[in-house]
Amino acid sequence: MLSSVVSVAFHGVAYGMILYVISVGLSVTMGLMGFINLAHGVFAMAGGFVLSSFMARFGVPFPLAVLSAFVLVALGSVVLERLLYSRLYGAGELTQVLFSIGLILVSMASARLIFGDQAARVLLPDYLRGQLHMMGRDFPTYRVFIIFFSLGIILLLWFGVERTRWGAMVRAAVDHRAMAQSVGINTRLLFMATFALGSGLAGLGGALGADILPVQWAYPFEHLVYFLIVVAVGGLGSLRGPFIAALLIGVADTACKYWVPEFGAFLVYAATIGILLWRPMGLFGVRA
Amino acid sequence: MSGYSADTRIRWTEWLPWVAAGLFFFLMPEYLSLGARILIFILFALSLDLILGYAGIVTLGHSAFFGLGAYTAGILSARLGVNDAFLQLAAAAGMSALLGMLTGAVILRTRALTLLMLTLAITAILLEIANKWSTMTGGADGLSGVQVSPLLGLFKFDLFGRTAFLYCLIVLFAAWWVVRRIIYSPYGAMLTGIRDNAARMHAIGAPVYWRLVMIYTVSATMAGVAGALLTQVNQFVGLNVLGLEPSGDILVMLILGGVGRLYGAFVGPVVYIVVQDTLAKQYPEYWYFGIGVLLIFVVLFARGGILGIFDKLRDKWLSHSRPKSSARASAR
Image (cartoon, rainbow over all chains, first blue to last red; front, side):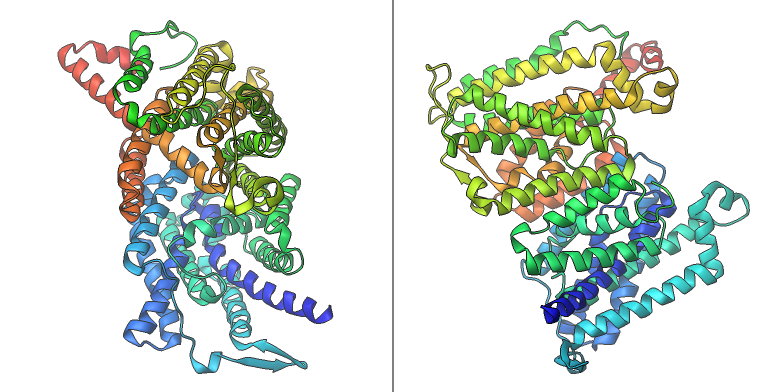
């Protein structure tokens, strides 16, 4: 029993970390721009495909491939933001929902045409394979790596938002966009940079998490509910909220699958409804 | 367009869909089962148009009611042996109405992302239940063995789908009549008011929340009836009636036709299902690609959908031939 508790907690935390790295950008862009972007999973899927095809086809080493997943997805998202998203800032939520569903469909079809029906294969380097012996137990090295690497990214992100000038501008714009604009913050540029960062992080999360959330063409639809839950339960525009929500969901989902598989994801959805009814703005939401 | 002051008598153009359905019945008898499916999705889209187009409730979970209706009818027949078509419809309507009222009463106090998330979570929960409770629902294999006894003891569901088509047509006609009555009533005017400016409706003393719960319940009932019809026509229920995907599909159909204009719900499913039927089986990737591009195009350039494009063309033509008529168009 105890050993299964440890293992559920361990895998749940790894899962939660990945969920957070993928979804945090969604929370910030939704909080910042009020854009309901259901297509966020597209960036995560793109990251996964970049990682796997760079490694398999061009023989790029793992760290470099992860980095390129981040950079390429961030750059790609800037193009999308300038061409399409920016036209719909301030449009109604229905418009944004439909637009992002359209984007999901296009990207799913493209992914299926290019990569076929198979899930993307990620070949881990030798130093990330095998088991790590800690406290008298074995843990898969890669999951340990995921946890610590994500933790590093998260700390960096929090430092950036809490302690840098860029972070102060983001926080100002989330709290009151008109005021931020009138004190001279270039919100357009800020949006673009933040969107790129958020999408890049999603790409990174999708790439790193490929062995927890298998990357294939249906990815953006399949995992959409979980990304949205993280953001809605955590609260828009907050960094802390989605972190706690992601860990909760990661652990709860792993625990449910382990102990009560006959319920499936039922309990997670029920808990989501409960939390949202109790706190409609999410646990730490700035705005609904 | 719609509204309290509009002339509410039925215009001659409004009979066109029914004439078309009649012609379809006689001229294309080999496609009647496809036709029945289209009618069912028109009914489903119509129910979504009530809450989305008229009351402005953006939902990703409308399949919850459709699926509940479908499973209610299926379980009644396959598990409990109730094969009467109208009993199944009534039960499906009742269950969906109940779910619509209960969930509506709870979730309609929220808005934006929270509301979207709650509607999505509700249909996801139902999907999980249908998937896992396989002794009742058949799980992933679906529920087969659904039977429908002859309507009124006279009309058997035949192999060519003649009875099914007419049956669906009659139900749709009744629903259309109800919807039309609702949207041209003072209550309908109140709904569009809430959609356009909820704060003002509060200010003039309208019970906004209760009005929304009411229309949500009506819409849920209609969606449940549509689901039950699908079960009866297919004599089968599968998991594909629940969850995000059918919600997205019906949303796309409605948007393509044109939202908030009653007949958009008629045009959208016809176009969507006919194209899907011819294209999707051979080239599923291209089908999704095309529908995605179309959706982005509609959102960016043609907010009114297919009917909106027709309206624009007509206005252009009218203002070309009679310059003064543009004043009428802009006055609404």
